[in-house]
Image (cartoon, rainbow, N blue to C red; front, side, top):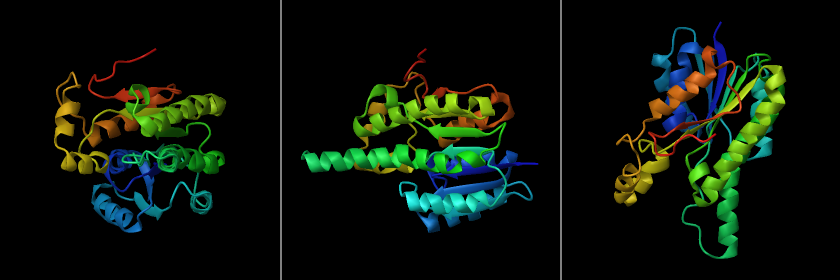
Length: 251
């Protein structure tokens, strides 16, 4: 029997690549995001890639709004226990905030909500519905959490701290909690607009990568698939860096 899998931010970019990578082990993949039409298009395009019998379910939700998360959790509770929860939704929303205090506060709150609350609220709402033992919770961090990047880096550092704490809370239940922290992956909505506005961004980022090339959404998804698979049953409380050597491991 396949796994019941939930991927937030699953309509585009890395989230969509994760949903694709997890199809072979799934009975159902639920892709969650704010834009219903984007999710429906993604589900239609994923369907031919899925093994026979695998259900792909698009569910729209603003994961920063508690009432919407409650509604989504109610829907998900109607089905069997969730085997894999991938908290991938997020983004760098504080870019371009003004210098006045109101703008600074707005930018920092936006990044915290989008990257931290989007993961924390849904995980809390589904905590009693994660399979015990054997459930997997995987959050999306970033190289920015350890290199520094204003409000976005601070938010991703908070994701790391939350993952470490939650992994200890759920270890006795046989649930693993880990994060994947990508480096420069330009073929994503996260980077595409910035590179279009300033092509030198790509050159500057590439100069910091010892392996001499950017990463791909599929490579990040492969790291998530490992943490969601049978080989990672004893791996918990880890931040898996996927960055081509830009940032070396830290103990």
